[in-house]
Every structure is written in C-alpha cells, then in structure tokens.
Image 1 (cartoon, rainbow, N blue to C red):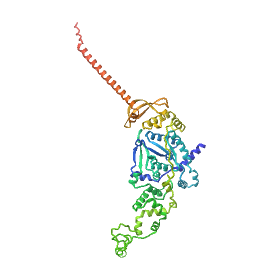
Image 2: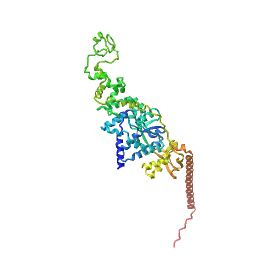
Image 3: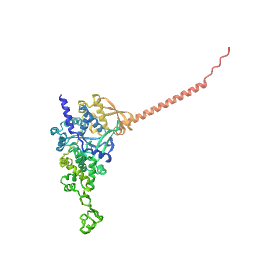
Image 4: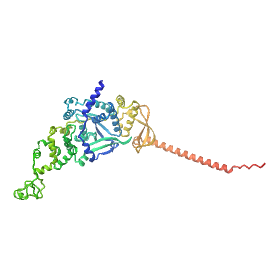
Length: 501
C-alpha cells in the first residue's frame, strides 16, 4: 500500500514539473535556422551540460514502469561517454516564484503549491545522481531552473553546448543547443544542433525577441494571450523592428504607453495629404503655414524622409501592434510580466561550479546496476567492460581506475562495422577474471597499441607466407605427380594379344 501511494505521489509531482518551454518555438526555429544533424562522434572532446530534470520527465512520461527511467538514463549516458563526450548533469532546484504561481493557476488549485517543492522530481534526481556519480560524472543541483544554469554554463564558456529539448534555454542565454538524439544504425547516432548566432542571422530572433514572443504565446511562467500564436507573434516582432523599436522594451511598456492608448481610441480617417511631401495638409496650405513633419514654417520638403505623424498613418504603421495591444489589454494578467526578469537575471549570483570528472567506481557501479535493475546480472560485467574499452579508444583512460583497465591480449581478425575498418580483439579483464572479445576501430587501437598491431601484422604476413608456401608445395607435388604419370604411360609395356586356339 505504501509503495503504491509513493509511486502515485511521484507521478503527481512529476506532472507538476512537465515543461513546455516557449509554446511552439521549435516550429519557428526548425525550418529556417537550419538545425544541422551531425554525427554524435563529431562531438568527441566536447563538454556538454545536460538538463537532467528534462530527461527524467521525458523518460517517465514515455514509460509505464517506475524503474525503467534509470535504465534509459544509463543507456543514453554510456552511449554518449563511448563517443568521447564529457557530460555535466544539472538538476532543477526550487521552482521560481513565477513558475509556482503558473503551476497553481493551471491546476486551478492553490493547494497545489504545497507540492511545488518538487518532492517527486527530487526523489528521481537522487536516484539518477547515484548512478551518474558511480560513473564519475559531475552532478550539480541548480539553485532554480536547470536550463537556466545550463545556459549560464554555456554562455560563460564553461561548457561547449547543452543537451535539452526545452526551448527556454535560448531565453536564458544558451548559445549552442543539441536536441533529438537519434539512432542511425547499430553503431552510429546523430543529433540536431542549434546555434544562437544562426538563429539571429537567419531569423532575426535575438534572446530578447524570443522573450517578447513568450509574453504572447506562453511559457513556463505565463499562459500568454489568447488567440495569439507563434506565427502572429513573429509577425509582430517584424513590424516592431521595421518601426525601429526594441520589441521587448516596447511590449513591456504597453500599459503605460499614452500614444497607443490614444491611437486605440482614435477614429481619424484618411485626410488630404500633400502631393509634394506626402504629409497631412495640402501643398497650398504648406506654402502658407509650413509643414510640421518637414519641420518647415513655410512650404515643405519633397526630399523629406520624415513619415507622416497623423493618427491615420501612425495607426497604419502600427496596425498589428495596435491589434495585439488591444487584445492584451483585455487579458487580466498581461501587465504582470515581471517574470520576464527570471529569464534576464536568473544567473545573477550563480557561483563558480567545481567540475571534476572522477574515475569510474566499478564496484559501486555494479551495485547500482543490480540494485536498480538497470541490467540483468549476466550482462553487467560484459556491459561495463564494453564501456571501459570504448573510453580507452576515445582517449578517456583517465576515467578508468588502474585496476580496472582492460588489456588487449591479441587481435583475432580484421573486420568492418558501418564501413569503418575495425579489429576484433580479445581483452583480458582483471575485474571479471576472464577474457572478452570486443570490436574496436583500427585507428585509435593502433595509436594505443601499435606493438600489438605490429605483431598481428607480422603474424598475418607469416601466415600468408606459409599459405603461399603450402600452395606452391601443393602445386609442385601436383606437377611431379603429373610428370611421373606421363613417364609411366610412356614406358608402359603393352601386353601382346593372346594367340588364337
């Protein structure tokens, strides 16, 4: 009974933490910012921050059994480690005030705030940390949102990128984001990469512009404005930029903007405009009284670049802005967008982290795998050995303790895996006390164990020589046999026919 209640509570708390990021932002970023699907092995040597809380929610919402999220975590993490990628894991801390209010509002239950300490997520995070620390990976509990801390690590150059599917990371200042890890075949994987510099150049979307869009379409902290979607928000951003206005500053000041208040109430229709300067009034009137838009007390200026300041043309230039301004003013919570500062200043006060990668604690890792039912017992040693071998092949021997280092005994044969030249190697493992055969790519193995490769090549050449000698010997023996047969036939005495009776 107790375990059932616990699991139910965990699910309930996890539901409270499910994030949407900026609604539909990925739809805008994907088509034109050119997410490049790159092979996972191209990230070898890079350090990536992982939004662990996002992974936990992803795993738990896609699985029916309580413990399987740890298996999925282990499989994904070791896959990345085998590619030579250094990982830093960041988990959510306390939910920001604005997120707590949004959660309670969405649940229509103020009592929900009692669970906003993320007890369920904290429980899952602790279990994940136990596995990750056994793998020697640094784990950080963020003061607030995990994606905010990841963005800070990336923006400050402490890591090369961020692994997450939460679009909020761009609003927090993330620069390079990796999303949608996908298996190509048994041996290769790919991942989509988004660069903030490409988003700015190709889409004209800055961090501040995306925050402004979030005010309308909704995010973790606010539900946005009804009937204003991501495409409409994007059109509004274009109009504001064409009018040389900073979108975020302009929108945040809507409530106090007297010009917009006046324009929204103005019913001024199109009036006569001067054919000479295109400003309000006639040429005759301008010649007499001048033109205020041309800044002349008499006549007007045909080359003037000043736009007409009449309400009709001003409303025309701010057509979308006025439409969405009027919609927004009908939204009771619109003016309460102080949560914007969460995106802009979440990293204020973040302390320098200690990022230390330790050697894998093999005995602890085996205990974690068995205790948490990550793998069946018969596969544990084999799986760990594969990981240790691949860590060596990707230059991460520092993560392997001296007593757990696999040693190659001999190369069994050459082969190919996914068009890559490989060796099938027999390895001696002190941790298992038995030998194990694993396939590795030729180039890194040759760099590490050139003497074994040389010995294999020499043995291969010797074997080839013996094979050739055997072939020549067989050929020589066949020829001798043939010659012997010919001589026998030549000297063979034919029997005389029998005499007739």
